[in-house]
Image (cartoon, rainbow, N blue to C red; front, side, top):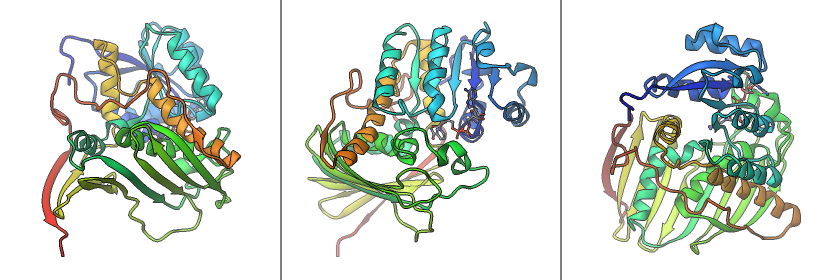
Length: 382
Ligand SMILES: NC(=O)c1ccc[n+]([C@@H]2O[C@H](COP(=O)([O-])OP(=O)(O)OC[C@H]3O[C@@H](n4cnc5c(N)ncnc54)[C@H](O)[C@@H]3O)[C@@H](O)[C@H]2O)c1
């Protein structure tokens, strides 16, 4: 994973809010051989100071504005982690300044901006430009994808996934940010959080050919629909349903499991970040369960992939087109709900099936990665 003899990428951070504190910095801290934070800026000076304190970064590395940060020669690449409505303009300016760019998701507040993200990438072919999607890098999901590729459940014909969880503003949590409560982007929580689920669906089931969505508003703390139910037809022929609900009342614990039904078996994916499981069953009612512990949600691996792209010219899995394809499923779902009709989705140029990420130079899925895995077998035969 390390890049011997190659100096770390000099990284500038634009936006140092919750995602940096909870997700990016913990990953960057463990990747000192790949990244050195040489500058940071945040619209809130207090937020910048907070970053300097918990990360131990020299406060003198604070830039007064994004223009000042982008003008610095000691910044090779930029991590853009600002609220969703501001992502595009910041990524655009960073590319114009000649930086490589890792921009947070989603790729587009609406269909028009999704197209603008694609045009932006096309206009900067000499730069590495990624709109992050950490789910493409999750160990459990990559394991499940490898099982599917190996034919473990035969031909996938049905996907079923219901995800429900209370969402109320919590101080210090993602739901506490005002821009999420009054979203200035189509889809609200379904574009912010649900887009990761769409990435998971696309990674495992392939591209989406048709959507038929319906939405409901049942959470007074979010100025956007809390419920989405979405029927899907995949380009490979499988069908599926994804239903997501973020009510303000507590809901009884739900398994929130994704189930993939094939002609030769079934895959069940569940658990939480601390412990995820993938259960593969066969026609003889035997199961093999693999449990994943101690790995993050893919944040470390997505930054490794970006570094490999910048330093070695590797084509990153989470390119802009893949993130646009994810966002367009959400936008298609909402457009379909508005029209009360099923909607065909056009293929996104440069996207297609999501590639399966493996550590660079490795044939295995997990070589050199942190995290533990254990497997067991059982039977559910009567
Ligand atoms: N991949 C994931 O799992 C994941 C999780 C959470 C958030 N995110 C993404 O990360 C981004 C940030 O989310 P967050 O939860 O950290 O939000 P946040 O509000 O906690 O942080 C955003 C920060 O950006 C600053 N800011 C706003 N506009 C700015 C500008 N123009 N220039 C510089 N700084 C600016 C704000 O002051 C704030 O500190 C969002 O795009 C979100 O979609 C991704």
